[in-house]
Image 1 (spheres, helix red, strand yellow):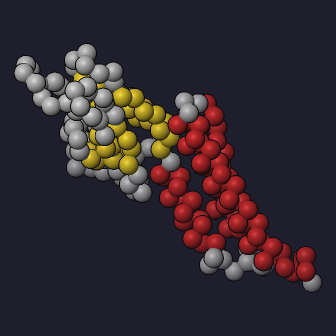
Image 2: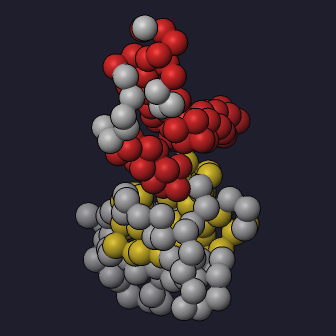
Image 3: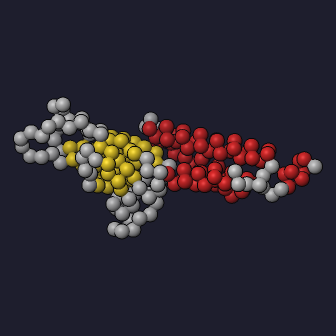
Length: 188
C-alpha cells in the first residue's frame, strides 16, 4: 500500500462516560522527510470544537476531561447529540476522514432502565402489552435518530431524539399506569 487513506470508526462503549474512536486508516510505509502530523477534531454538541491527541492505528478513548468539557480528573456523562469528527494529516497526501454520529448513550441508559422495569411491574396484561408497544415505539425513534444523523440529516435526527426522550419521560413518570384501577374499572 503506497497511498494514505484516512479512516476512523466510532466503537460503542455502552457507557455514558466514554467515547471510543478506532483508527482504521491504511498507512503507507514511512518515507524520507518530516513525519506527518495527524489531527483529530471533534465537534461536541453544546461545547464546540476540540482538538484531541490521537494515536494512529489505535483505539482512542476519551472522557469529559480529555474532551475539555470538565477539568482534569473530573468525569461526567458525555452529552447526547450530533458529534462531528474530522481526522486529517498536515500534508496533502490524503483527504480528511469525516464522520457524523448521533450519540444517544444517555437516552439509551434511561431506556434500558425503563425496559428492565417492565418485567417487574405488577400490571395487568393489557397495560403490559401497551408498555411493550410504547417501549418499542421509543426504541424505533432512537434508531431513527441514529440513522438520520448517519445520513447527514441533523434536523430529523434531533426531532426523533427529542420525540423519543419525551415519550420516555412520559413512560417513566407514569410508572406504566399501574395503579390497579385499570383492572377494577375495565374488567370487573
